[in-house]
Image 1 (cartoon, helix red, strand yellow):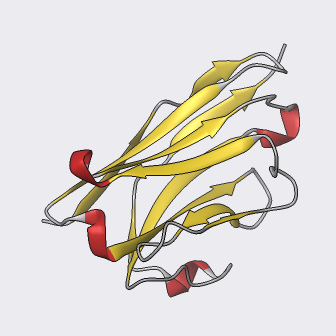
Image 2 (image 1 turned 45 degrees about the horizontal axis):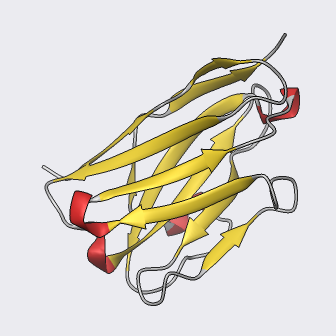
Length: 125
C-alpha cells in the first residue's frame, strides 16, 4: 500500500521553527517529485514548496521564500520541510504530496498522485 505520512507539526510561537517530515512507505521516493501544500480554514489549498526528483531543484511560494527549506533524503525515503521565522499566517494543515516523474507539477493539487493525511501547524502566542 502506497502511503505518505507527515509528522512534526504542532504549536509554536511567532518567530519559532518547526521541521516537518514526510515519510513514504510502499514505494520509493527516488522517482517522485515531492511537494508540500497547506490549507488554512476557509482558504484553498496552496503549494508551499516542491522538490524535483531529477536534479533536486526546488520551488518556494513567495510567502515562504527565505524562511522555508525543502530537502530530501532518499536513503531514508523521507522529505523534510524546515520552517523558520514562522508567522501566524503560516497556520494551516500541511500536506505532502508525490507525483511520479522528474518534475513538480505546478500549483494544482489534482496534478499530484499521492497525499498524506496532513499535519497541523499552529503559530500563535
